[in-house]
Length: 290
Image (cartoon, rainbow, N blue to C red; front, side, top):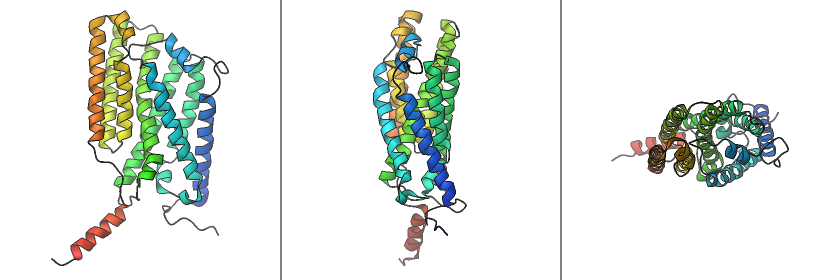
């Protein structure tokens, strides 16, 4: 009979854990293959489609490469780590459940839809990715705040919390941009596009602030990165809506980015010992005569 890992929460068998890891690996590989297929294999590249249908809140091109590189590298480390014997039954992996795999599968499907210029479908898929990662981050927070909270070292933070937070925050910002893109493609007026853009900026800011309060600084910083790139790329707005509107969007986006960055930097990080260890130390301290 196979012995289960001591750190593995009750109710989760070794077979269930192996299935979860297998699905995570397959889903991540699917996403990587679709993402890095040569241009033209399944349609146009992301850059070609973005340039063809630029919106008034499309982020500057320089914002995409660095953050996606960091996300894919960290998520590769996350997938490799959970395959190691030392990670078997780890509560952080079990806590995330299948939300990470769902995000990877949806992102692969998004890549296919976007390359085929199915803009509305791609917007729905990208919001699905953002929602899946938001649920994953929420599960991590709930586990960290629970009475059975396991230890969270900086190493585990880097391979678990950091990639999911960055991916979640970036896809929230990108998903809202994709919605604006769908509105533009469907022939909405310039004023309607402006309303959608303003609402999108507000939703992104609120999402980033909520994430920072839930100990997901990386999520908030990723949203801030997106807002900064939007604010510094207002050439399309100047052409469609004039200088005043472009300046308003620029100042608003940059200001929100600064607020989110500060909120992320001044919130407590989630790293620390297991909750049981903290409780034991408290009991020992109280038992010492004074």
